[in-house]
Amino acid sequence: MVTAAGSPVHLASALEGIRLILHVLGAAVWVGGQFTVLALLPTVRQLGDDAPKKVAQAFARLMWPAYGLLLLTGFWNIAASDVSGASSTWKAVLMAKVAVVVLAGVAMFLHQAAGSRRATAIWGAIGALSSVAALCLGVFLAG
Image (cartoon, rainbow, N blue to C red; front, side, top):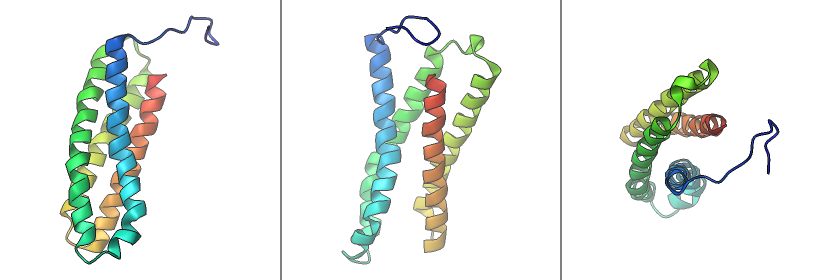
């Protein structure tokens, strides 16, 4: 198979594949988990006043290790890239991704620490939207 530019398409090496699989797995848990918990929230609220907090705490036990995995494999992705030869546009997208990844982590931390329902909702929305933005920017960086 050949790309539109005429260069051959090849399989990733085993190490490259593992790195990318781990990164996608982390994103699936981090981003997908946020939207899954959000979708389940109306049902969870019916289980009792403390149920949403218990579900959020349970999810946090998965979410934060996934975020750590994303950071680790994200730096690994950068180290495996030829950043010096990258275009200024690619570098700008990378910097934007780094910014929204940091924003996502901070927002989700503030979401968990929020003392009011409104603050919880606002920080949760910021965290979810910035997480989706990071995912989308990552797709563009993968080229």
